[in-house]
Image (cartoon, rainbow, N blue to C red; front, side):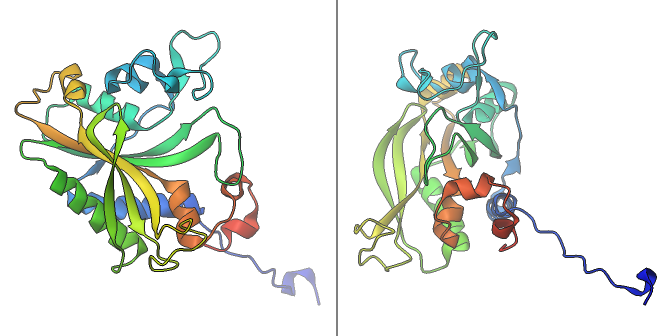
Length: 249
């Protein structure tokens, strides 16, 4: 048999689970009236912190949490995609609803559940009649789409400088149905994301009158959603380049 008669099998390519999950998140939430906005990964201190009501003495500004660009004054690798929200509010008048997917960076030791780089999708909605009920409804709609219709959700009070009130969003454990297991650390609940109503200070910074306009914001960790839904045991696998991981999706 000649070489020309041999058939060489070619395997099809696979989208990375991070890409697939970002597309899933955007595809689920965008029909609610959100548009996708992108921004720079190298960011100024102003947009990353000041424009989001993060105090000058906040620990997130320290070297322990933030990568500062050596030799470039007041420049960082963005620690959250909220910086893009700040840019959008500065140059656009409400009402608006945006989704911001992208990579972010934190100066921390890596282990099975922490990486120096990871992906977020953040959402922001500003309008005249926005309420906490709108935030809850939007997130419940997405979480049911992502994890299944039977999912339950709760809001737990928390603090973030750019929202007031702030909340951690938990879902009922889908592994044990709330009975308690290793995934939910025997609590019956799994922490999913942070959210809240946009702080009036943030609106004032961008010359948006908080007496007329209100908003909500939320931030999803794409990596965490993948680990929970698909049982990925180590976040570092998502950045290993190992095709055995990618080919499962």
